[in-house]
Image 1 (cartoon, one colour):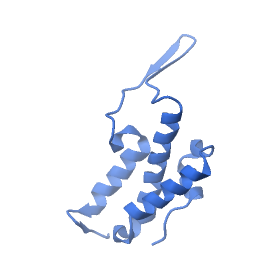
Image 2: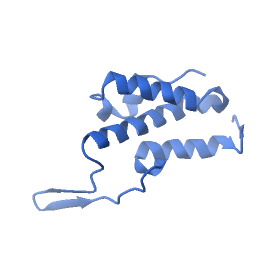
Image 3: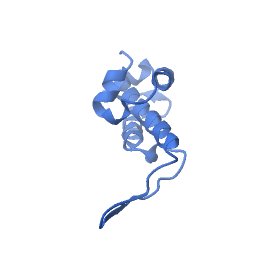
Image 4: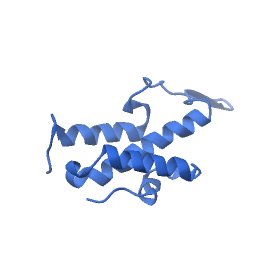
Length: 112
C-alpha cells in the first residue's frame, strides 16, 4: 500500500492549505512511520486522517487554541471543549481512531 499525499489530505481538509510545507513534510513523515503496511488496505486512509488531525492541532495552536465559542451579531455558537491529548480533539482524529479500532485487533492487523 502507498503512503498518503498532501493532495489526498487536502481533499478531505481544504482548510489546511495554508499550513507551512515544513509542517506538512513532518506530519506526512510521522504518519508514514506510525501507520505502516500492516494496516493493509486502510493504510493510506488512516494516514490521511492522522495527518489532517495533526495539522489541525498545529493550526489551532497557532491561533491560540481551539474555538469553543463564537458570536456573529445575535447568533452565538458554543462547542464542547475536547479532552486534551487525544484523537477526540478533531473530527479527523475521531475518524482516524474509528479506522484504527476497526483495523487493529490486539497487536495483529486484520485485513478485510
